[in-house]
Amino acid sequence: MAATIYGGIDIAMKIPPHQYQATVAFYRDVVGLTPITDKAPAIGFELGPNKLWLDEAPMLSQAEVWLELFTDDFNKASGHLSGAGVVRCDAIEPLPDGFKGGWVTNPANIVHMLREPDAW
Image 1 (cartoon, rainbow, N blue to C red):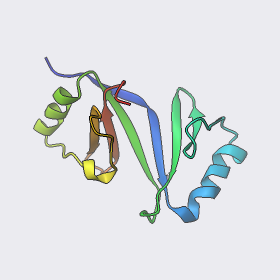
Image 2: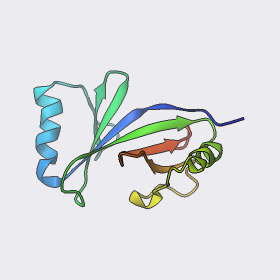
Image 3: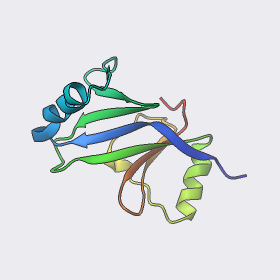
């Protein structure tokens, strides 16, 4: 039986420092989304049923959007993706030891965290 993979709830926007504060202000003050502040210093916003997380990323020159995928069994799902030629890119951002998840990219180089829902 193959592992199930389905859409997560988190969307991360990695933003260079020179654009970070203006981007936070855009979602907070211009668009008026409800902020999520319980994971400070991270700031997020309610985006319908999803959460949009804004991360300051000093190593980037332009913003990137990262998406989340859930799976009921990370090892099976990782094997399935590997068999389809999908390359893991875990070095892109460290994850805690024992974390049941990892980083992959799609063919357009959009980063996805693939994880079990209770991985945190």
